[in-house]
Length: 510
Image 1 (cartoon, rainbow, N blue to C red):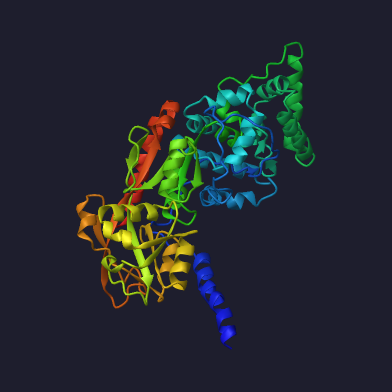
Image 2 (tube, rainbow, N blue to C red; image 1 turned 180 degrees about the vertical axis):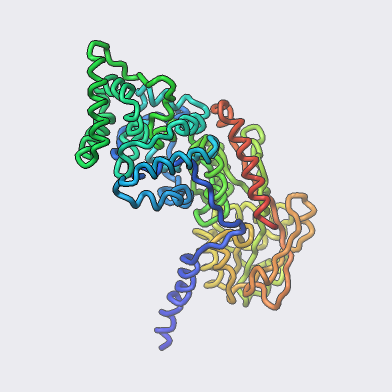
């Protein structure tokens, strides 16, 4: 029986750990719903074709994105854009095309040009477009437009006539917009001339093949294709011009959404873990505000020391760092300090450590290269007595909690309360939060005094009382090199970041 009990211990510990990690993460911020603007309701969201060739990035520098978050990032944002059109995309016929046309016109009229927001695309998808279309003149022309989405939106709002083929047509054909090509049929002469000049374009031929297939069951589309062909025959003696566009049509309206996004600058943002507050701010605040101007790509890191290293190496263009880190003012600008991160020092309930002053001779588990490790090293520098505490490297914050419970030791992590999944793992009866009440830490000017209460952690702080601890501001920095390299959009990005700061300030409530 004793042997069985020992076998059960790791299982019993792992079960609540797994439940806590799988349960929804509560954050300080409210749920956001971002308005979807004049998004085409006529076409399926899946591209008709994809490419797989290589291209230098918008900035001309190819950078590794192996540590970037994959397909998960941006999904909530993309879903919020598509919600108003979920009903339309389920329709497979266009029996009510006049009604759809009226709805499209009303939707277009109700949206301002600045309201149109593109989808988020994973960086791997964008790289495919960059590689394949590097030498395409239309692609280059669209990429050189600073206000790409504003220009595209303003043009689209002038095109209120619905296409003959609404639901069932693809949204994209390589770098070409399905919406543009189908709507161009409303102008037979322009459609015919475009067909002549782009007759050798593989993407255009893919669109024409789909249009022919759909025209079998759509008399209106059949008639428009016949008109296109008749108009095209008038240009038989003129040399084709692959860069030709109808008068007044910007290149940003011709290319697909993914192609247009791929022509914009990458903005690689160093965050912590995928379950941490930095990632959440990137997902909930940075992405919706910056999506029209840059491609926000979060880069997962071990914490502040790792982030500083990636910023210095150019692997990240911006990032969140703890306020007790020393950012190089020659290399980066501090943009805003959106919330306070609080030191959480917790020990096993059997450890006699009411305050940090009682930690001598004890062991504290901290992930190596994490922000918490940086903070502990600062503590030691400010009060050398803490050097008597044994520091052991944990693989992660989850591992630190695991080790603290199993070895009856302590752990440290930094975060705003209730902003990370780790919070729920910490709030357990086998751990107690320890007061950090050393005046030397606050006197340094680096940290400020704050408190954690039993209302925050009902199990780790029992008996309805509070403990003192210290806090530092989370700090968002941007590389000066990135701003210099992208001077054409840096001012707009800075303006948008100021709006992000206001959003977070309204919702943090610290």
